[in-house]
Structure formats: C-alpha cells, structure tokens
Amino acid sequence: MSRKKKKKFEEMKSFPNVLQWDDEDVKGKVKKIINQYEKVILELACGKGEYSLHLGNKYRDTLIIGIDIQGERIWKGAKDALEKNLNNVYFLRIQIQNIEEYISENSIDEIWITFPDPFLRERDIKRRLTSPNFLHIYKKILKKNGIIHLKTDSDELYEYTLETINSMKLNILKNISDIYSFGDIENVTNVQTTFEKKHLENGKKIKYLEFNFYIIFS
Image 1 (cartoon, one colour):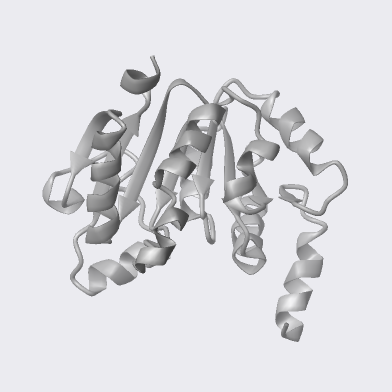
Image 2 (image 1 turned 90 degrees about the horizontal axis):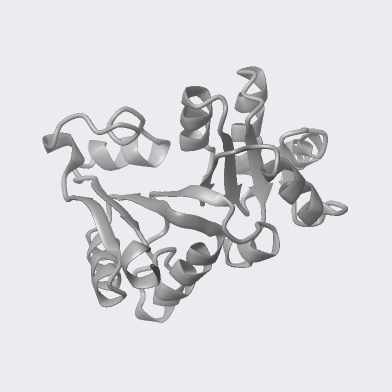
C-alpha cells in the first residue's frame, strides 16, 4: 500500500460518517443510526459516493448510506460529505454479501445500484449485484414495496437483470434502455457518476431499471 493510500486510510478512521467492518460494535452503531431516521436509502458499490452525495443533498431528512469495500473510494465520498455538511450521509465499508449482518430486516426504503461490475465471465455470474442470491438478501432488508434501482451501461447486466426479474415474477416499475433519449428522469438523468461520464464519452447507452418485490412476496 502506498504512503498516500495509508494516509487516507488513517484519516478515514477519524471520520464520524464512516463505519468499517472492523470497528468496535460497528453493527450496533449502524442499527442505532438507522433507527434515528424514518426513511433510509442505500447505495451499493458506491465508489466515491456520487449518488449518495446527490441524494443526501436532495433529501436532507433521509438517511443515505453508501456501501463499498474499497476504502480509498469511500474516503473521497466521506470527505466530500463532511465538507458539504451532509450530516445525513454515511459510508459503510463492508462486503455487500454480508449486509444482513449490519442492517435489520424491513428497515430500508430504496436501494440504488449504479454502474456495478457486470462480472461478464460465466463463473462470476453469482457475484452480480442483481443475481437471485443478492435479490433475496435485499428483499429481507427492504420494507414492503421498497424499491431497487439499477443504472448500468452493460447490455449483458441489463438483459440478465430483466431475465432474473421476470423469472422471479417481480414487479417492474420502469424499464428504460436509453435514458437520455427518454427525457428527464428524477435522480437518473440529473446526476452522473465518474463511470457514467466515461461510458457516455465512449458512446454507450445508459440503461435503467426500477423494480420491487410486491408481486412475488406480497
């Protein structure tokens, strides 16, 4: 690990808006923070937290938690949140597959998944954040009718997610294969992550899915 990276990791330990898997009583701290808010939104694989910052600034009474395992990226998002006085934005550094250990059942209103790794190799499909094993985890922590948002440039991940949604008989709320040809979409076309900007520069179309578990789990 480089000296610059080590410095960021050390600085992040002092950030009041960052909770890490090896912190003392981190699970209890996360649940205590969540209990202070009526509405809670997660950004999974949040990277630098562009969406977390956008949502936190827009919905000041809502708790926003960005989740990722990459500490250096979280450092950037957390630092920006502190500088912007976004006291409702937190970052949780854990493996997403362990999210149930930190977040109680029926406590989350929305989950945003923005430009996740599509894991294109056949042997890695189960690692996709919209695979059935992950969706069943989300179902547990989401409130009834809680919403999942997926924003991606990957045709493969988009088609795979559609197939998974249909096979599980989930409820599709929005299905847009090219968001910028559709018109203004709240919280979709008015915020762009670093990855999205690069994808657009390369001429890729950005796809968006919004769905919930109402049908299969009602």
